[in-house]
Length: 124
Image (cartoon, rainbow, N blue to C red):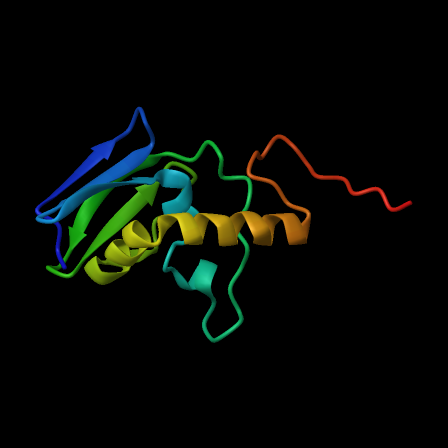
C-alpha cells in the first residue's frame, strides 16, 4: 500500500507516512537499523549484521525509487537500502515489535544505541 504523502522531518530525524487509513512516524534510527540493504540484511538467511550506535542518525534526503519504493540517504553515509512500500507499511504497523527485537539484540550482543558509549559486562 503506497502512502498518500511522505514527509521528511529532518529536525525530528523521522519520516512521516500518511496513508488513507492513518499516519505513522518512523524514527531515522529504526529505518537505519532495519535497512533492507544487503549490507544490513546480508545476502542470505541468517547473514545479517547488527547495526548499532545509530542513536543520532538523521536523514539527508528521501527520493522515489521507481513507483514501488523509497531510497533513503542517511547522514552516516548509508544510502543503499531500497524501502518498498510494503516494507515501509510493515515497519509502520509493527514498529513496537521491531524496536523491542532490536533492543533485545543489542543487549544480547553487548552493544548500545549511543556511538559514544560502550557496554561493559562484569561477570562475578
